Each structure stands twice: as C-alpha cells, then as structure tokens.
Image (cartoon, rainbow, N blue to C red; front, side, top):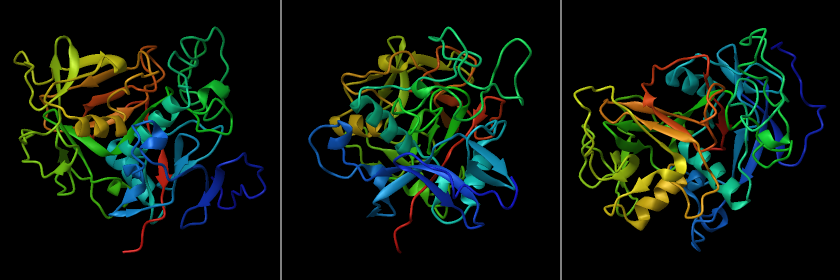
Length: 360
C-alpha cells in the first residue's frame, strides 16, 4: 500500500467511516453505536451491553472493520477488493492491530457476539464463501476469486467485499462483509483452558495494555450461575465456572468436564450451533453471558447449521469464528476452539476494530 494511499474522496454509505491510524493510513470501518441488552433481544434489561464497557467505563461506539484485513508494514487495514491476510497466528493478529495505535485491537468475542445478536434481532443471518468461492446455497459464483489462493478449476479465498449483498451482515452493501466464510477469524479476549471458558473482563481486550498472553493475569473465568467474572485457578477446574463439556452427543455448557478423552488428549467434539446445550448447573446469568459472547443460541435462534468445535483436554485453545472457504457446514455461528494460539493456515485471517479508550 503506497504511502499516499487516500480514501478521502470515496463516497461512503451510512455508518461507514474512514478511520486513520497513527501513521495516517486509512481503513474503512463500520460504526456501531452503544447498545443495550434489550436492544439486542436479551430480555427487557436496558443495561449497556458489555462490548461497550472498557476498563470499567462505557464507550459511545465501536468501529468494526468493514472488510477482512490485509497486512502492510506490520499493520492491519480494512480495504476492499484485497486478498485477505491469512496464515497467521493469534499473537500476530493481535500485534498487527495494536501496532496501529491506541484503541485499535483485534475484534473481540463480545464484539462478535454483538453482531450475532444484532443479526438475529433484525431477522437476517449473513452468508458467504463456505464452498470454494461461493456459498453452498448458491448455484453460481458471485465474488472475485483471490489470485493469491485459487486454482484453474475453483476458487478458495475471495477478494474482500466482492460478494453480493447477502454476504453483508445487514443484507446491504453498506454493512460488514464476509463475516461468514472466506477465512476463519481470530477473536480476541477469549480462550478455553482444559475446556474452561476464559475471557478478559467486559471488553478490556480492546485495550492493548491488557495482555492476552497465555500467562496473563487478565484472564477471568465466568461463574456459570451468575455470569460474573472469577479468578481462574490455572488448571481449568475453577469451581462453578463455565466449561464446554460433551454430554448426550452434543456440546454442553456445564461446570465440569464429564466427557472422556479416550486416552487421547487431542480428542475433540462437535455440534451444530443450535444444538449446543446448557446443563441444569448453568443459571440465567451464565446463559446471558454465553449469548453475549455468541456461544449459545437465543431461544429462537435463526442460526442453523454452523458446526462448532471444542478440544477440552488441552491446556489452551483459542477461538476462531465464522468458518472458512472449504466446508459447507461452516456458518456465521461457527466457532473453532481447537487450535492453539500458534495455529496457522491459508484459511485463517482476522479483522481489526477500534474504540476510543476512556480516559484513565
């Protein structure tokens, strides 16, 4: 990207904004104003949704990259008609976003959850490239194939934002593109430790000073009954915390891991997103937090399919969202909690976000 790359003259649709990083380089972002639980369809509570709480203070808006990101000079950028960045691990994705300056960050689990809830509340679930250049429901190809990773007979990745309106979160070209398919997206502020769900408090993962390293003290478990944050014990066995178990042939949120590894620590389990269950040990507060993170359906979920993965016998597994180009079972609700933070592949990418950090 040349140093004089300029989008200032570009006509943008509503809620699309050009933001510049601390090197004065542009990204096209989508503005999401502060939302409440009620506005996202989680009951009648007008309390601010936790994606809009950073370091204990509320923020008025969040900006999400309109496009899957590329990387130039060690920094993340949201631009159209580009081959999305790929074959990078979680720490690289975090660093490419943080390098842009204060408030820039890898899109977090709560931000992803907010988009899932918004889409459900507004009655449309976006589709995208989950079948080698097209969606599995499409008979033709409607997006531009990536020259960086396609063959003479079929596409794999597609160029950012070149799909039809149905590939945008609001079914309109003004929205956020490619949330489903194309490349899996690393998400910040979330991991599983021996199956135990761990996050950073509220949306503190938006602040690069809050470490997401494997040994960071910022990681918190979640009380399965109340949804409150807890200090984890380090072994994934924190009493009363949310854990992703496998019961009755489906992924199940519980307070312990009852499934067996069969002697193989690489054993993994899968379920479609709507089939994920909660045990009787999980209370309404825990369920609401799972829904906020996009890890459990609302009572009338529109998200069908969307296979999800967990590997509960490994010390740390980080979370990818949205699915890739190579399996029609992937959908908007898909999560892949089976890779270590070092995982890389041609179908793993990322998306940056921005929030104006509250004054200390």
